[in-house]
Length: 462
Image (cartoon, rainbow, N blue to C red):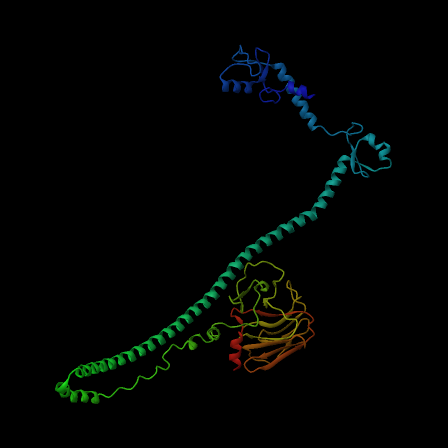
């Protein structure tokens, strides 16, 4: 139908196809509900179009118009749901051209456009192509599942980053608070020493001044009395002369006050090399670790201390599965690798069930079992062994180890182990390493293994 015909079948109030139309005395038609609402809002029974007063409070139903509108609505719905037809021949599409990959009618099959083409019935083509799409969807669904899983890992990692940042910030603040506390205490001690020196030296100066004040008072009295007698004349002066002379002679002149050597504040003692002296005092508080462990490489069951130098076995932690982390070996790597020079670090291993110390290549396998690129000294089932996959383990003639020194000569291709207290050689690997090496510690112990700080190493050697 034309747009004008649709307009003729539309209510002037709601502009939709008439629903239960009624007709007024002026011959204009409206939806029954639309008209009633319009009248209620305006409280006048007039035509919404011509404004003529209606003769009927209850308008008559327009049955003819209703039938036409219902027929039109039904046809429109049927047309919308009807099967599509061939655009060239207006015939039903019953075949699917495999060459052109499109539905066609029977006339198209016999036309030159589809000469020598292959066809399938629509139903068969639908099933085949649905199956093809389902097959194509499988890798997409698999990829979607992988992406969702990876997205979850990213979100977990982002949350863990926040936890790491807060924990690291807290430990930084704690470390600086220890330093601040030390500096405040050191400041208080040095200011107290300065004030004590000030008190003693001011007291000494006051005592000298008081003693000198007594001498001044005595001399002043003697001088004043003598001067009064000098003002006498004649016989009166001579009568007092002998007594005045005796008074002066009986009290000889006191010695001159000695110079006040060392009386001033020893500023050089308090200020000289102040920063250096404080720094040397801080050596009692701080230490240097030649190896700092990297928690991002630690197996989820490995627990590290706050300063990242102690390692022990604990409950499994909920940590991100980042590429750097070991997922089978109970170990952790140092944060810094070496690809030249010589390097040493000492580990307090104590006793225990199983542990290992040594080095691994940067490219060592983190997920799954290590196959190569590993050199270490291990305690396993009560025996000390030199281990380097895939070479066979070598049992060492060692009974007890408490502290082990690991010495790496990267350029010389030597990795040596020593018993720390006696500096006794235990074992040496000879190897051309070829890439960066990282210290490692592995343990099955709940008691910690510890990287010894440099200051403590020196104390042990002494």
